[in-house]
Image (tube, rainbow, N blue to C red; front, side, top):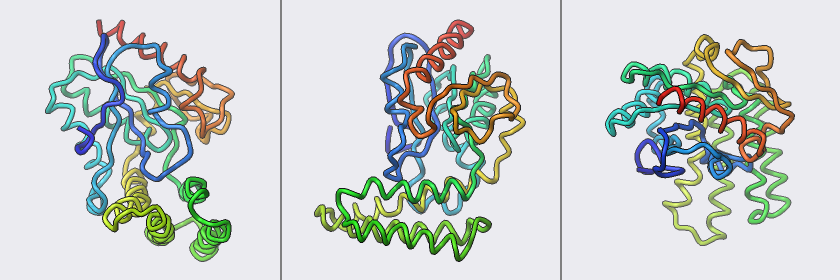
Length: 270
């Protein structure tokens, strides 16, 4: 199923189906749902979103992303108990849960982990963080140039126009991946796929800007870190934890809170 819209993080067992929404294909060093799932005590099958194939996202709207994921769930005739979105994934998780509710007797529970509206500050942050994954392959001078080229994009375009900033950063990332891939002996197709992942991430953020999740977030439970940009936003419940944003998906306190919420959703579904 990974080649389609979802990948399975945990199979079967007792309990219902939980969906997780995140973008994990940029070689980021932050924790991801694959780190969180082994820490969860709540039962049930867990899926994670898969981004469209590189290039396919160019013509996709935010609504297209949501419908792509929802359609794959409906095709398998699965009932979803919980939808969890992390960071900008929370933007998609909210309308996804709403869409799935149209085909179920009970609406899925919506959990948001450090929800964040898409912004260019975050894009620059993720771009520079991606260099950490290349430090063992590229030289110190090459890593320094990677950061300098990104800083030059920021000085040239600022924080306003994603249509200019996104492709510029994606081009720098693609070139760095090509050099790293050659050193690892990867063929051209594999280098191209890996190098295009940041462009896919830019498309994911662009599509997210077309959605307005804030009214839907008002009915969700949020778990926010000490670095949250959304503290003070309106949620049905806000569980505030003293954890780092980048590491929250491998933190035991976050896993405990999510497990408790998931188990509650299972009790209500039963």
